[in-house]
Image (cartoon, rainbow over all chains, first blue to last red; front, top):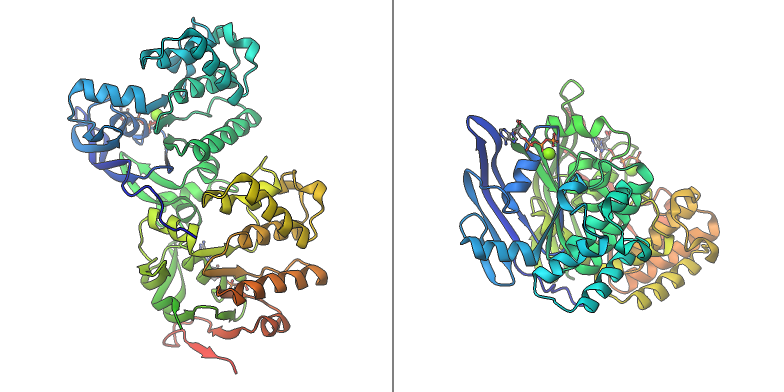
Length: 262
Length: 241
Ligand SMILES: Nc1ncnc2c1ncn2[C@@H]1O[C@H](COP(=O)(O)OP(=O)(O)OP(=O)(O)O)[C@@H](O)[C@H]1O
Ligand SMILES: Nc1ncnc2c1ncn2[C@@H]1O[C@H](COP(=O)(O)OP(=O)(O)OP(=O)(O)O)[C@@H](O)[C@H]1O
Ligand SMILES: [Mg+2]
Ligand SMILES: [Mg+2]
C-alpha cells in the first residue's frame, strides 16, 4: 500500500485573522490550516463572527489584522496583501462561494444555463456549444431536469436554486469553496439530498470547503474539522468527531448537549 | 518485534462543565504496549474506561496528558495532541476502528458504507465493490439489503456492516469495541475468523470482548483495567495468566 498522499502543503493558512467594526469585534485572532480535500465547519451562535471570518478568508472583506496564505495554481499568495488582479484571478478561477440566500449568488433573471455558463465564459471559454454541454452536464449532476436549462431561477424552488448555485460555482473546477449556511432555508429532505450531493462532489473532485452552519449534524456528516466560535473568538477547534464526542469548552459542551444526536 | 502502539503515562479526566463542573477521572498514568501481530483484550467492569481507551487511541477523545506513540508507516507519531490532518492520515492508513454501534449516514447504501475506507485510499469503485460484496456475503448480509441505507437495519445487521467496513482495508492496528456483542453464533464464528486472518497478516489488535471463550480463541493477552478511585494510587496493568 502507498501511504504517501500527494498533498504535502495546506491549501489555506489562516494566520491570526481579526476584524473590527469600529470598536465592535467581528472576529479575533483566528488561526487554522485547510488541506486539500478537507472540509472545515465553522459553528457558533448568531453574531459570533462566522460570516465575518468567512468573508475575510475568502477575499471578500479586508481583515483588520492577519494574513491568509493561499497555495493556488499560481503559487502561494497572501489573499489580504496580493495585488488586486492576482487576487481576483485566484478568486474567479480557483474559488467559489455559495451564499445562504441564492439571490446573492445567482443572477435571478438570466437562464439557468446562463448562470452556469457565466464563469466558464469569464474564464475564456467562448464556444457556445461547449458551454451549453457543460451546463447540461452540471444540471444533471445537481439533479435539475435538463429541460429547465432555459428557465430563469425565479421559477425554481429554494432547493433547486441552491443546487444551481452549487453548479454555477463548481463548473470551473475550483479547488476551494466557501459556503455560508447553504442548507438553512431548506426543508429537511431537500437538505439531506443537498448534503449527499456535496459529500459526493467533495470526494469526487478533491474539493476543499469552508462551511458555516449552525447545524452540528451537518458538520458530523460533511466536515473533517470544526471551529467553534463565540463572541468573535475560536473557543475550540479540532477533528469534528472529537469536538462533538469529547467537547472541552463549556460553550461547546452546552452546544452539543442541547441537541439530540449530533 | 515491532512496537505498533506505545501508551505512556496516559491521563484522562472528563469535566462536565454543564453539570456542576463534575469531574470524572478515568485514567491515571496508564501504560500499554502493543506489538505487531499481537492481540490484547481489555477487561474490567462496566464503566472502567475500556471504550474510552479505544476512543483515545483513535483520536476520538482528547488525551489529557501522556503520550500515545503510534508507528505510522515507520515514523513514531504522538497521536495525543497531533493536529487533525495527521490524525486523519493515521486513521486512513494505520489505525482502523470498529465502534460498538454503527453511526448510520442517512441515504447512503450499505455497500457504499463498506466501500468508503477503500475509496478514500484511492481504490477504484469496481475493486472496492467486489471486496465489499465478498465481505458482506461472508457476514451473511442478504444481497437485497446491499443497496439500502442501514438506517432501518436490525442491530446485528448494522454491526456486521460496521465490521465489514472496518475490515475491508488492512490496517496495522485495529481497535474493536465488542464486535460480536449483537451477533448470533454463526456470525460470531465468521467474525472470529476474519479477526484471526487479520492477525495472521500482521495486524495488531486491541479489543473488548466480553466472552472469555472468544478472547481465548483469538489468542489475546488480557489486560485488566482497574477501577479508578481516589484512594488507590494509579490504574495499573495486571496481566492475567
Ligand atoms: N458591517 C458590519 N458593521 C458593523 N458590525 C457588524 C457588521 N457585520 C457584522 N457586524 C457585527 O459583527 C459581529 C459578528 O457578525 P457576523 O455576521 O460575522 O456573525 P455570524 O456568526 O455570521 O451570525 P449569524 O449566525 O447570525 O449569521 C456581530 O456582532 C455583528 O453585529
Ligand atoms: N464523552 C464522554 N463524556 C463524559 N464522560 C464520559 C464520556 N465517555 C465516557 N465517559 C465516562 O467514562 C467512564 C468510562 O466509560 P467507558 O464507556 O469507557 O466504559 P467501559 O469500560 O467501556 O464500560 P462498558 O463495559 O459498560 O462498555 C464512564 O464513567 C463514563 O461515564
Ligand atoms: Mg452569518
Ligand atoms: Mg464500553
